[in-house]
Amino acid sequence: MLAAPSFGQSQSVLRIGLQDDPDVLDPHRSRTYAGRIVYAGLCDKLVEVTPKLTFEPRLATEWSWSDDEKTLTLSLRDGVTFHDGEPFDAAAVKANLDRARTLPESLRKSELASIDTVEVIDPMTVALKLKAPDATLISQLSDRAGMMLSPKAFATEGSYTPICSGPYAFEQRVQQDRIVLTRFEGYWNKDAYHFDKVIYLPIPDTSVRLANLRSGDLDVIERTAPSDVKSVESDSRLQLFNTPGLGFAQIYINTNHGDRAKNPLGQDKRVRQAFELTLDRNAINQVVFEGLYAPTNQPFAMSSPYHDDALTMHERDPARSQALLAEAGVKTPLNVQLTVANNPIGQQVGQIVQAMAAEGGFQVSLQTTEMATLLSEQQAGNYQASLFPWSGRPDPDGNIHQFVTCKGTQNDGRYCNAKVDELLNEARSVNDESRRKELYREAMAIIADELPLIYLYFDPRIIAMTAKLQGFVPHPDGLIRLNDLRLQ
Image (cartoon, rainbow, N blue to C red):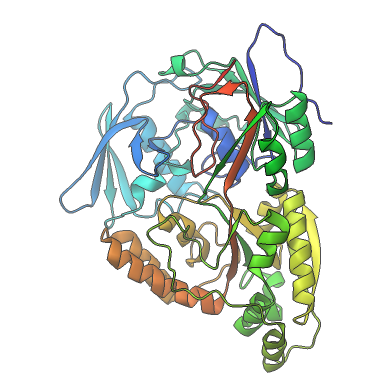
C-alpha cells in the first residue's frame, strides 16, 4: 500500500489520490486532467463554472459586451493578492493573457485566438478587444486560459514555480510522488477553506488508490474504477459521487506530424475507417466500465444541446474492415502501435481494442507510458495512435476546435482540412445556438469521414471519499473544489 506522508496532528491535512501525475504546473503550458484538479486549489480563474454549467464571477466580478460584440470588458475583484504578495489588477490580467497568447509553448493560443489586444482601462477594469465576435470566450476564461499567475514569476521561467492567487499556495513537488499546497492566509475568501495543507498523491493503480482510501491514508480519490462502485457504495465508511461528465476518450491518430504519420493508418482515411469498424464501443463499456460509461462517436456530451443524435455510430463489422483494407491495397495484418496510459483502465481498453482490431486485419501493439509522458510524446509527433482522454468543457468549442483545426494548439496529429477550419471558426463567432448546431453538424460529418480521431466513450466523474468529509459539491467537470470542505 502506498501510504501518504505523515504530518503533525496540529495541522489539518486533506489527502487526495490522483490517477496521474500532472505535467508542468503552468496553466498556459499544461494539458493533463490531474493538473486541472490541482489548479482547483492553487489558481483562481477570472470566471467560474457552476454545477449547472453556467458561468459566475470569480476574479472578474462582472463583465459586459459592446454592441458589436467585439469588446469584452471585465470588472475585477478588489483586494486580491498573489501568493508572492504582488497585487492582482488589470495590468496582471493583461500580462497573463498576453503571455498565454504569445508564449511559444503555450497551449492556450487557439483558445484565445480571437483576442486582438488587451487594454487596461483603469487599475480594476480591463477590455479585451477582439478580431471578431467570440461566443466561446467566457467559457475559455473559466478554465486554464483564465487562470491568473503573478507576472513577477514570469521572470523565473527556467526554474518555474507556480505563483497564483488561489486559496492554497505551492509548497513542494516530488515527481511521481506528491504535490503539497499550503493554506494562503492572504486569500480574499479564506474563511471558506478549512485545511492547512492539501496533498495530491499520484497513484495510477485504481485498486491501490481505493485501498489507501479505506485505510485512511487518503481522504478522497478521483476517477474511481467502475468495477469498485458497488463496493464503495456498500461501505458505510465511504461515500461516492457519480456525476454525468463532459469528458470523453478518443483514439488520436497521427495523420501529418513527422515520420510516425508515414504509414497506411496515417495516410489513408479508408484504413482509419477500417480500424473504426473493428471497434464495438458497447462491448468496451460493458467489459471495462460495468455499463456505467456512454459509448459515443462525437465530442459533445449527451447533456449538451449540441449533441447530435443523428450522427450514426457504426456497428462493428470486421468483414467490412478487411474489405476496406483490401481496397486500400494494404497487406494484412497491418501493424499499428497504440500508446496507452499506465493505469488499469487505459491498459484494459487498449487490450480490448487490440483483440477487436485483430479480427479486422490489424495487429496492434500496445505501448504503455505515464500520462504526462504520453502527452509530451503526442505533442512531439512521436506516436502512431494514442488513447487520449479529454476532461471536457461546457462550450462545444472547447471539445473540438483545438484538436482538429490546422493550427489548433492540441492538434498533435497535425490534421488539416480548410473546410473544417472554416466551419469551426464560424461556430466560434456566432451566438445563435441553432446556427452553431448546423456548423458543428457539418464539421462532424467531415471528421466522421476522415477520422483524424476516433471517439469511444463519455466517462462519468466518479469520486469516492471518506464519509467524514462534508461539504463536497460535485460538478460535471469532475474537479475537486476545496471550498467548504471539512472533516468531521
